[in-house]
Image (cartoon, rainbow, N blue to C red; front, top):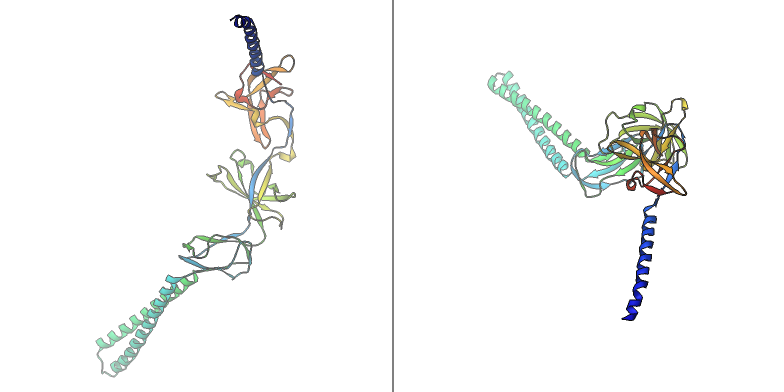
Length: 360
């Protein structure tokens, strides 16, 4: 019992010491470190870069003109083909059956026509000799004329069915390279369904989506710089088409660019960085540009956390309203609210409060 009483003062001192240590720890913990930068104006040449992809300048989508099952696939992606080469074939069962029926109908119509012709000639001779009535002669004449019409109709039907059989074959319309094969053996395909894509010639275009805030600055025949990820070479291109309708999936306006030189190392599907220069006469000016992580937005608009240095390595942050300008590849232009030499927080804005002490 005496030993326990002896421990009371020691425990009290220990608890006070722990309490003080915790308070000091909490105080140190409350002062968090922040990333910041000192503002310097940058040269702005008003260039914008967007990602696009290469496509063949003349890409043809090939399809069958009737339904059926693929029985022959004679090409693969990357294969060179010549004009007139057979690329793919359908079974054509229905078309062949219809052709055979039409051929039989044509033969029957021909036989009927020849019989009617013979009867008509015989009747005409008899009529001219006065041994045949006019009524019988007119009947034979009408029968012969109808037989001629039936034969002509059967000929047209046979020609149509023959064409339907031809629609079950796909031939190369021009020399080129197979860009895609989108149907396999024994697969059922429909009339008009694209089964082969053929690149004609060596020309390459680039398709790029441009946001609505800059589409009005792009013009036909404008020159752009193209950098393909597969090559270190910077190529030159020319704007050939500007879509007036926004693409709903990407929320951008499609723009087509034609390479000014044929590049053997560039293939359809390759990714390209397309740089537009919106500066007039290569004009360069200076502006304050901040990373997007340094700019916040609330109900009152855009803001930054401005840093006021205290003693030592601590500082106080204050929310400051700013006006932003154009979005660049490496940040956003600040129109007003900051001056060169100001210090601002560049990350973690959502965890800060005005008047909060931070460590630099």
